[in-house]
Image 1 (cartoon, rainbow, N blue to C red):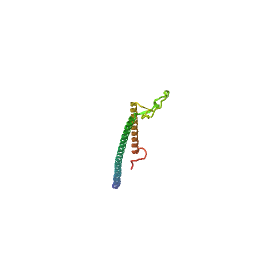
Image 2 (image 1 turned 180 degrees about the vertical axis):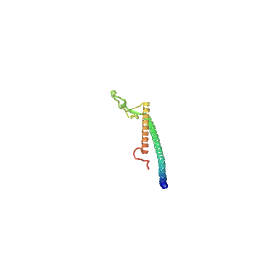
Image 3 (image 1 turned 30 degrees about the horizontal axis):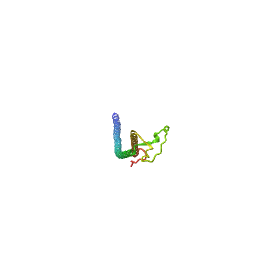
Image 4 (image 1 turned 90 degrees about the horizontal axis):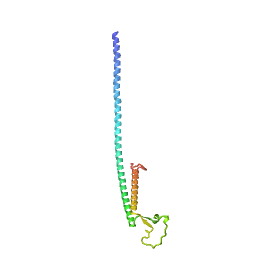
Amino acid sequence: MIPTQYLLLARISAYILLAVALFGTGYHYGAKGVQTDWDVANIKTLANTNKLISDNAERVASLQQAQATTNLKVSNDHETELTQITAQRDAAIAYSNSHGGLRVTRAVCSSAATARTEATSDSRHDATVTGTVALPERTSSDLLRLAADADKVTAQARALQQWIIDNGFYGPVQNEK
């Protein structure tokens, strides 16, 4: 009886070892399959990520080129406007100097307390000037300088507004394709 018991024990042990071996092998190959699937999914994700990065880099380069073009256009337009402002100021100064400088009406200079009568005069070549008073040269130059500064600030604000619009930060987007 002992040999049959050993034989039965050996069979049971063999079945248990076979089951453990089959389970271990299946688990091993199953884990490898899961790892392979996971690796394939990671490779696909990495490939998609690299493609998105590449596409985004191209898009950013395109946007930078468009912005550089817009910046150059706005800058050139601003420089042209400043040149025009300078030319207009110079023309205004020349015109003002040819007509005796900047002038204000005599009524601005006289107060109500000093009312006086003026005799009528014949119409001379400077009849249009008689009703005005020339401003002092320093006042004239200060006023002209302030006007020029105001024109430059206005031109700068206009250029900034154009830059904002052209880059699509306000109003309809003009740079999108």
